[in-house]
Image (cartoon, rainbow, N blue to C red; front, top):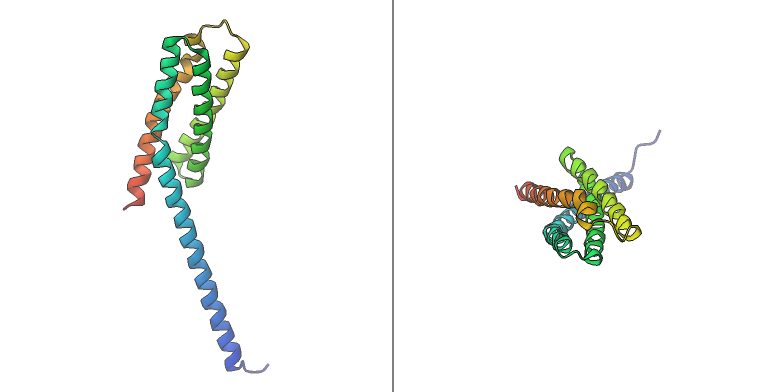
Length: 153
């Protein structure tokens, strides 16, 4: 077997440097994505409180249309945040992600029920989801604060 030439050794060294640089770029990109996700969560998490208020007001006013709009908004936001939290892949965020996914489905089911049963009692039909929206709003805000604290340690 022939001894490797200096060109072979240089090629191997450059390959290793290039591989290291690629790994650093991947790490940097992943860090940027995580920071973008955190910034997005910080921006949209307070919307849960607004949706909770909108849904409560719709029930107080007996406004079925506004209740459906709030439920659709909650469904979308809960599904979106659930997916982001799932990527964090910790026990606490996975648990909250699952709760959000379940509540999003419940919001959809409640909205469908309101549409299919136009004479049903709005307060009764939305009671469970209204409780869940309030509880999840608090949990999402607390979780986002914890993620923020961890990110800036």
